[in-house]
Each structure stands twice: as C-alpha cells, then as structure tokens.
Length: 245
Image (cartoon, rainbow, N blue to C red; front, side, top):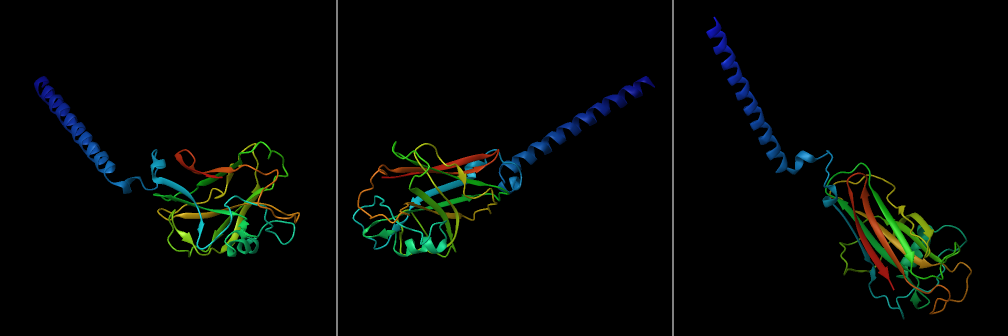
C-alpha cells in the first residue's frame, strides 16, 4: 500500500511539473508574439507612446509676396475694437500678410500626429518676446490660432503658399517677455491614429490706435520665440521650437 502511494505521489509531482513547464512555454510564446505584433498594444497603455507622437512647426512662405523686410510692423487687423474673427484673419491672409508694403503678420503651420488613437491630447503653445522693454499687460505683441477647412495642397517646410482661408479663430491673446503662455490650443481633445491635426498661428503687432505705420517698431523692438508641445498625460511628450527675428 505504501509503495503504491509513493508511486502515486511521484507521478503526481511529475505531472504538475510538466504542466508548469507547458504553461511557462505557452506564456513565453505569447509575450514573444506580443512583442512582434504592434496590434497587441492597441488601446492599451504604452509606456513608450512618446515615440509614436510627432509635432512640427514651420513658417508659411507666401508665394509672390514682397515686403521690404520680414520684421513685423504694427498692423490694424480689427475693423472695430474687440476680438479677431475669421473675417479679420482672412483680410490679412488675402494680402499675404503685407500691410502698407511692410510685413504685418507672420503665419506658422503647426502639425501634430499620433500612431495610436488618443482619447485626450494637449498641444501647448508657448510664446515669448525677447526684449526687456515689453513687460506690461498692454503689450502689442498678439497672436491668434485659426483653423482652415483642410483643403490646402500637401505641405512641407519649403512649400510656398498661394492662399489660406481661415474657417474659425479658436484662440487669441497677447504675450510679452515675462512668461510663456502655456495654453492648450487643442483643449485636450481626441486624436485619431495617423490623422494629422493642423493649426495655424498668426503673430502680429496690434495697431488698434490707428497710429501711423512705420518701418521701425518704436518700443516694441526685439524678436519672439515659441515652442509647441504635443503632450499625453502619463505617457510622454514631444516638442518643436521656432524663432522669428
């Protein structure tokens, strides 16, 4: 009886060990397959998501536009005191940012994309004037974020744009030399896999007082710098910076 019990225990141990080896083998095979198949992480937390994010910013080059200098001079964008709307922006765009023979605005194209669907994503805009003279709240340095209907031609950093049409102004404010804005121009909205999100940034020196426009900018000298950051909470972020003289 004891001998039979001993054999039973022995074969039982062998059976359990064989099962454990089989489970380990199957688990290893599963993770090996997962690591070679990108689809297995779709919809799951990816600690390396930043590698699947991209953002770029490039200055719009206007086709056929001529100005004495690319440095900004004060320009009047609004017909009345108040916020910019798409009509105001389109008045500037139709003139390719040329105002009185000078450069009245700069336009930057911001493009962000992700290799995965995102339920929430932020695109932070930081702007700063590199001049100690522009420190108060009444600064003339201004910006607006606008969107188009997306029917413009394929774009690259060297593309010369013939025209742009704003469909809506989504954000606007002033900025100075003290601190960056850090505003989320995407408002934490969703992003669809491999579907680029495009925003346009309009930078100008407001001339709401209707003063004479000159080639020099008294009291507003200097240049501005900017950074756009595509950020997904808990996963990562990517940045792109730009500077205008």
